[in-house]
Image 1 (cartoon, helix red, strand yellow):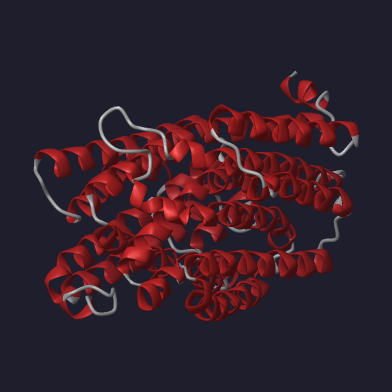
Image 2: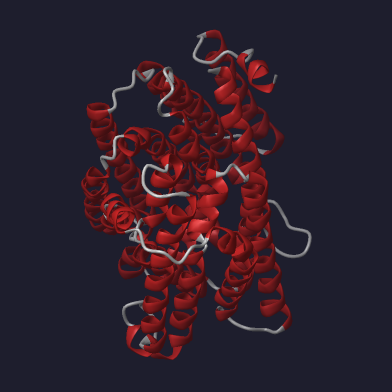
Length: 481
């Protein structure tokens, strides 16, 4: 079992390096945007990307997940057929949708909550959606074949192109917010061009009706599930815009993105986790293995939560060498949402872990129900809490939504693929992380004393984990060996 966990950790590290580099550049764009654009303009950027995220579900139609399931087992068709069928369907579907959105852009600005003069942003969004969608299956192929290094390199190239173009278009060419989308579009197009050799190697223009039917049957539940999942991630933006205005939305989103660190960890883990559990699903010790992986995930995520929650207020207020702070001072009022967002992403990470059973047993039909309940919770709680508590209410709505997802995925996963997870240990670790963060709300010190106090809290937390047996530091040596 140790060797399997080590292989998972090795792939996670490779994906992690590229993802951290990518997200680092993405994160650098936050202080750049917040020091260049007013909150109202930044609010428009985040709102358009929210719609891109929601529309992406209709472009991918869940076939990336279908590819993973059937290409990992080859129960129907050969390797090329399992690549070609989902790729061709996504390509055709995405092309049609992008053309429609592009030509009807002036009529769609209202839906995007934009003025009629901003139809260019809708056209750019349509093109971004197309290129991002047709990259899905080639990237899934690289993950399934454990070509993590190539996957990582392409992701880094993508973000570097986007980052450099943002600087050039905004600082040199003096473009407005459209520069953000132009840079994203060019980066996505170049990424697909670099994936063309993999596409041509695996593409076969044939028709396997049985495979297509099974792919669609398996993948279709991901459409409503994906819609619901995206609603959870982005519905707070238009609701904040409606109830609190563009400025509050801009402040909220800038601070919400500080939760990127735990979300980053979850994303890195997910890249390695899906091919990992599919490849080991039939192993005799698979369930015990999956249980141990979840515990290790919670330990790592909880420690990360505590580190970021303790130090992020000090980090974002640091002076930058060129201008301003890491986050513009006018955005600091939203820092209190960060710990809530971070913890919410831990719950989402647990959901990702628990999805293995649903995936292995082909019970994806329950995903729309699970995410649908969470989406309804998200919409209702945002609508109730935002007018009462503003952005902090929206952050708690996110927490409640991911909590619902975690609870219901646990129920259905255990029903069809029972795993003896270390529940008491997991709950204890999560509670300890919260308990050791709370003193920073009660006690506040100035200067270096504040950092010393927070560091002591972190050290005690790690010590408690070790001495109570929740996690032995000595086990880290085994993973490195």
